Length: 210
Image 1 (tube, rainbow, N blue to C red):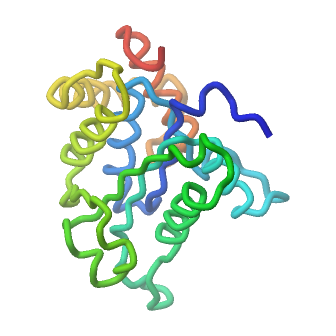
Image 2 (cartoon, rainbow, N blue to C red):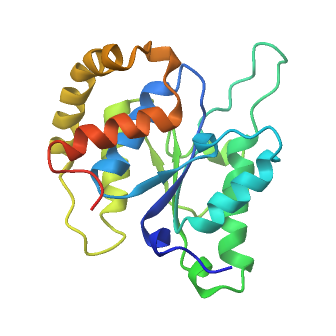
């Protein structure tokens, strides 16, 4: 299967989707879009007839880059077990890079995030040696780390962390107006709707994807 021309701009986002993580998740998406990349995620389409793992594999294959936040290691209140989805999807991404016969897949690059820089050694030590970045549970830190990593991926000129932070503050201030226009509550906003909102806002300021 031929990869799309967008392969070199697509970033697979593998992160928690719970309400507690949402401020970081939304900040990372804004940073990715601000830097002119395309964000991909398992939540970009819902199809009950499609196995979730098949969808994830497809998105990973179509994305040269990946951001993987493995910070959600707390035990689930309902069943007393941790979440393993994020390490699993990181493994799929690393496996695609290591084992695929396609030259483009071998050029994949990823950013691994955690709350603390070296905490991962206690629960997923097999990735020792990877360059893990810490966001400290802070959305602004997550944006800066994301932007600085994206800046290493090519010769594209990117807005600086301070500018992205400032624009994100403006965007957040505009969200109530945007939601009122769409007749949406903030907790009703789906991944694709948030991406569209952020992209349209950025494009209105001559930013976003080019």
